[in-house]
Structure formats: C-alpha cells, structure tokens
Length: 409
Ligand code: CTP
Image 1 (cartoon, rainbow, N blue to C red):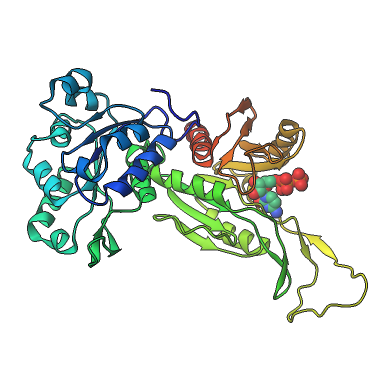
Image 2: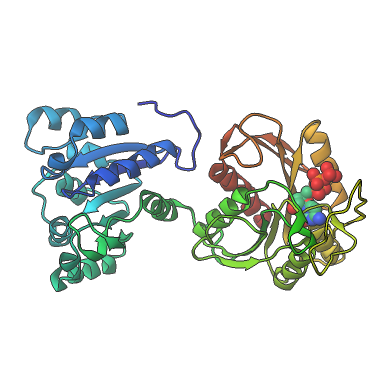
C-alpha cells in the first residue's frame, strides 16, 4: 500500500513490526510510525496480550495494512498468513519484547501470531525489551537474552533505565522510538565502508570579537551529523570535527569539538592524514575580526568599524596538501547557493580540486539551514545528478554511495 511519499533511507525495506503485550506497546506505536515515515514498508503482528494494550485498528491505521493477530483464524490466514507476513522481510522488530515473548522466542515456540511469524523468519530480528526491573534482572530472562544474542541473528536495543510505568526505577523501559529506528538502520545498512576512515566537518564556526560576541551563521550541523551516523552504520571509522551545535554526539563516532575556523583547520589537519575520504559539510564563517579583544568591548556612541579578514579555507588547504601526492582522500565539498546552483558548484569543484560537490539551493522551500530535508545536486567531473527533495539522512546515504563508488575507482 502506498504510504508517505517522502523518499526515506528505508525506502524499499520491508519491516515486520511485532507487538508484545506490555504497557510500552503504546510507545512502540510511535516507533512503528517512524519506520513508515522513513519510507519502509511495514507489516504488523500482535500477540493476543498486545491487543489488550493497543487495538489492532490503531496498528492497522499506523502501518497502512492488515494486522496479524491470530494464527488459527481462517480469514486472517487466508488474507495475510504468518508465512506471507515475513516472506521477503529485511528485518523483524519486536517491541515491546516482554519476558514471556523473549522466553518463547528462545525456546522456539510458535503459539501465537508473533512467535509463529518469527519461526518462519530468515532475516535479522531486533528485540526491544520492556518489562519490570526485577523481571529484566531475572537470571532466566538474562540467560534467554544471552542465548539469543549468541545466535548472531538476534539483536537487542535497550532496555533503558529510568522510571517505569509501575513506579519502579531501574532498567526495563522500552528504548526510545528513535533509538529503535537507529538500531534498525544500523542492521539494515550495507557494510560497504568497513575498514575505511572518514573525516567529516560539520556545523558553523564562531569568530569572536570579544569573549561574548561572535560572527557566525545559522548552520545546525544536521547534514554533517547525518553523514557521520550513516558512515558509521556502513562500517566506517568516523572522526567528526564539529563547530558549536545543539546535537548530541553520535554514538560510535569520534567527536572533536572546535569553535573557530582556525581551530577547525588545526583539528582537521591533525586527523585527516591517512583518511580515505574528507567530507567538508561545515558552514565555516568566511571572515573573522582582525582583532579579538581579551575583555568585553564597551559600546561607543555612533558608528563603529569592524575590521575583518578571511578565515583559512579548510577544504582548500586539505586539497592543496595532497595535490602533489598520489594517495589522497576522496574530497567532498558542500555548496550553499541561492542562484545558478550548478554553475557555482562546478566552479567550486574545479577551484578546490574536489571529487564531488553537494550543492544545495538554500532559498528553495524545504532545503538548507535548519530543515530536516534537502534537495541537492551532486556535481562531479563526469556530470550532475539532481536528487529529489528528501530527508537529510537519505541525502547522506546518496552522498556516501558516491564516496563508495569513488573509493572503488
Ligand atoms: N569551506 C571550508 N573552509 C572555509 C570555507 C568553506 O572548508 N573557510 C568548505 C565548506 O565546508 C564547503 C565548501 O568549502 O564544503 C564551501 O565552499 P565555499 O567556497 O566557502 O562556499 P561559499 O561560502 O558558499 O562560497 P562563496 O561565498 O564563494 O559562494
């Protein structure tokens, strides 16, 4: 069934989303919705207990398809049986995975819609446990988890620690929906950057006039962080050199925090040696005050002059450093333009000696600073690709596809 038309990083992926019977089922609905939003084709199954917490009608409305709740009901089996449900699936997600469900999976039981579906699955399975603190700590539950992990095809996300619905505090909360999605993305990603090292710059820089004032721009760092996370998922070792942003450090990524363009250059040169690719997504401030006052500057009456000088060009410096060497990283730049996007991007490609420029019309709706989506052109020596408006995650995936191709050539 056709759902959201936003092209997402999970477009073309088939997910079976299975609900266990716990209060966290309501939160799992949100996780299911995130998968749909990312473009995945989602099919759902529920245990009888799960249907006591959220109705199959809710899950049907969210997933856009019928929900398997009974294995012994002829009409459901005829329309949407457990074998059909999982045929061709890329991943089964079980949320919430209750103690009972984990035990049944480990024992290989098939007494309901979820466990029978799972017995027929050949793809990876992601379990998101949620239960009472004491149940999670129970040695039988822990042995079941370890036994499933040891098989290799069963993976776990969470549980998180915190205040549980029953009032206890400790480990047992369902992982956040975004974490479940993230874990699924990792399992579904190709490992085509395994053994590679990528250096990525992200975010704005701040060029201080004095301790409390600076020149900067509205970059949020989202594009660069999305590239870093996607590269890590595809197996790369990633160093992210980031200006000041509000995003949390992505897990599994080495993060180097800087403030100014000069610091970003210094940090980049320190880590770029030996990298397979350098992706410069930072919105580096182009000018900085010639003088940085050590103390806060007091305001003066009337107009004031501010003398500016150019900041170092990090990407051009890295490119120049490798210009006479045989082995050099794949060099990717970003271009934010408001007109003649392709021409300006191509000029940048040539002037800075790059392999690829990701060009963005920041004046177009849904593109540029502070949005979740981007519409970009990929400009390379061999030609230009115009990508559709899509999430920054999906753009990151497309950029990395090109990096993989360039690394192979
Ligand atoms: N870049 C950099 N260091 C700078 C400036 C830019 O590394 N001091 C990188 C950016 O990360 C981006 C690319 O260079 O990958 C952008 O090129 P640039 O020529 O700076 O783009 P604009 O600022 O848009 O340039 P112009 O003002 O000339 O259009």
